[in-house]
Image (cartoon, rainbow, N blue to C red; front, side, top):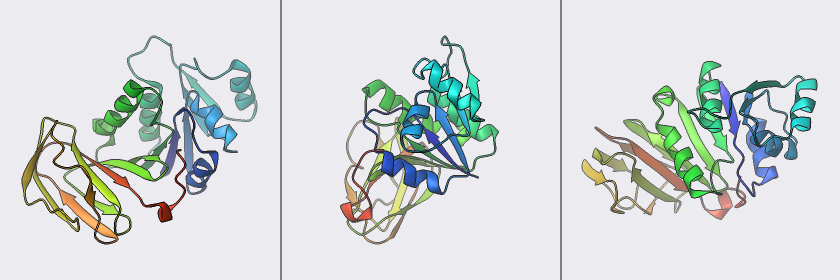
Length: 220
């Protein structure tokens, strides 16, 4: 099931978000992400979180329109976006696009990136999307799609990622190790419409920055 999860990024592009929603079978908003969705003309199926950033009158209006509201206590171990992702998994999502999760506070942005490593998401197609940028974890192997000239960065999310091998990138890696810290994997270049990356151990983040012709440059 194709699922769109909407977080509450500042300065999100409503038109870009609306395009992402067109192919979604399930739309989940993380707390204030519900306001972002509504501003884009999107009615979520469910809103998840502690509701500290969603006005009560807006939450009531959503309930009256058949939107499920799952409220959690403010003092909790999970972030609202984490709860939304767990809700997506619980409902059987296999493809998850996360919008509105980048930008704003640095701690939120980094935390949202690391949510991609959640064990519950392994084996699923989960991507953070922000304008021309998409990010996902290569669990062992992954295909990278875009256009020639798109920028591809490979960033370790564990101290070492071993056996990194690429195909279809300008600067190839041949069963090498990438280490957290040094910028060895930053700013590679896509040679064709599809490239491939594989690893033998560790967690590798793939960040693709598509060219202007790929779509709007506005942030989601």
